[in-house]
Length: 223
Image (tube, rainbow, N blue to C red; front, side, top):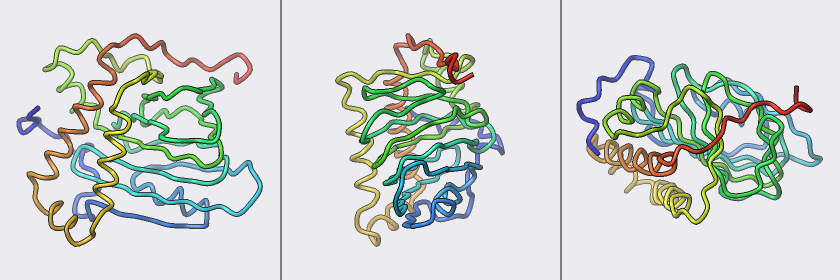
């Protein structure tokens, strides 16, 4: 896929001039929430014990990737940056994730409008991978690809089944978190950053191509 000709709206530019990759370790849950650059989120701890969190975030123009690890059960709410569509994949967790009251037990992909994120109740020891893509860019690519996916009825939850995309995205983050000197040298090249964006976009399109996921409306209990 080649997105060189995509006209990038101003809202799509995430953290221009900031380091492409950042890693944060914290024992403060509020600080952990603030480390999600461009997001306005609130994390409320609901399990006992000291909090430990790690965030690895990669930003490049109209795409943002984040791997969020935490050791305590939390209620998450808030919003991503304006114009973002978010794709979240739990890589591992000690129990189900509840999205707007719906329990998610199987490996799944959660898709939501960044400005209207559903409330999540997360279990202890969660390893969560998130991708945020500018809506205009995503619409442009979906149209070019002839995809049936529509971003009007979100949030949605896609069961991953035996898809290898989950492992491939996790491996990409492991590579990004490798040797700092080699990584910074690579990410200093626009062609490398563009290649990473294109690779992640292809993975996301593969997951949402069979658009059969129903919208996740709030349950009666949640309402």
